[in-house]
Length: 256
Image (cartoon, rainbow, N blue to C red; front, side, top):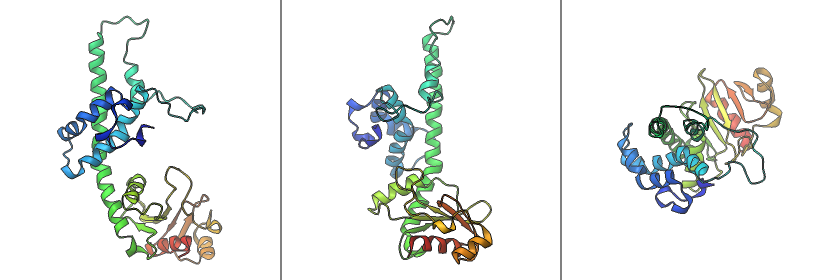
């Protein structure tokens, strides 16, 4: 996969399409010239994130790289991606139109540019602040519990998984964080298992099997932890009325 390549500043040209080559040489300047404004220290992170979030897929399609492993048939075909939508702007083989190829190109270029800006805005205005909070939580993990395996966010809803994996790698603590504590919109404290990197449903540590599928009084009785509200049948998330209860659930799950 293209994502396994080095940072974009050192990408080998043989593995890049025209889009990737333009991004390699001019991407940082383009990002700096567009809103929202970006402080210089954040540019390398945003530059790499824009590649993995936007440019990489266009690159892969242009280079004829399959999205599924060799020999594995895709479960469905995605015709809503940027490349497919740009492709539909081409003149059909039997279409009669007064619109010129240059005019179609301009329409496609405008659409791609707007999407580039939308992704950039999302990274700068959402992911960058989220990354800062995740980093703060990881650095303060020993204040949550002496194991260092539980972190706490001030609130839920923010994108954190990708940042957690990246920051663990940068800090040489890969696989250490087992549970994340945060409040939901109703004020309930959630205790969520961290999945193994690269998986969607394989937890590093799950909530105890005997708690799963239980709620309220039944959960409190089985777990011995006051305030318990629920534990999902999959063992990946639970809830408590209080931070103390949520933390106790995580501590008991990691056995420390």
